[in-house]
Image 1 (spheres, rainbow, N blue to C red):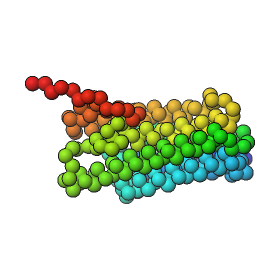
Image 2: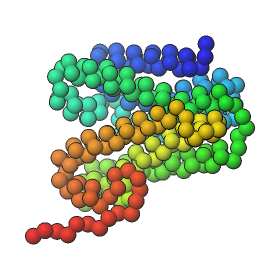
Image 3: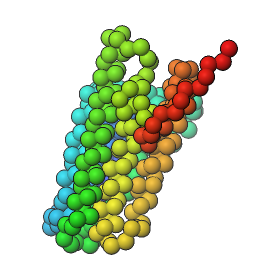
Image 4: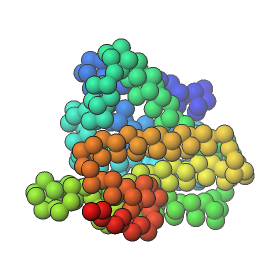
Length: 265
């Protein structure tokens, strides 16, 4: 049995488990709870089948670091406490029962679990093209760790802001300081950047910048673009002043902020 077949079987079992759990509990956030775990498993499957080739093993170690950090951040926000993501509740209220049932099955469970496999597939590419761990691999590893550090800082800043907000110690209703001065969603940017680096590891292994596995990185980026638009529509409805923040601050890529618009009489 190939590593790809093993990953496919694991992904099917995870998907089935998420779907059944969502039907039993009425909670559709089960994929969120395995999001930081499944890719780690997939990368170690590829590493094992490669007989722990240096490049694939480093990829697995880096993704494990990503998974540990993301699991910790998700857990401290109550992600494993049984609380459903508020966005799914909003979508449920906008659909009929059967529409949401299909949305849960096809998008939340099937599509997102497929995406978790796709973003891990550069590990399979690297497994199929074993070789030395060169300078480009070192550069990519350093870049991954830099992006991981960036996401860690962004999530910590957001965590501290919400703690101060709960204590009534903030002058704004959403975070606009630190990395959030340069990006409305710096954590999203760094998250995607890490998976683009994983894609590049596979490309380096194959000796060509353009690989079929680029589909995973592209679809992940599109998912974050769509998620950002939906989340911000809810935020804007709750906080009208968020419109000014949208005007002055880049959505994801950290950039110098623009000047505030002049107040109108």
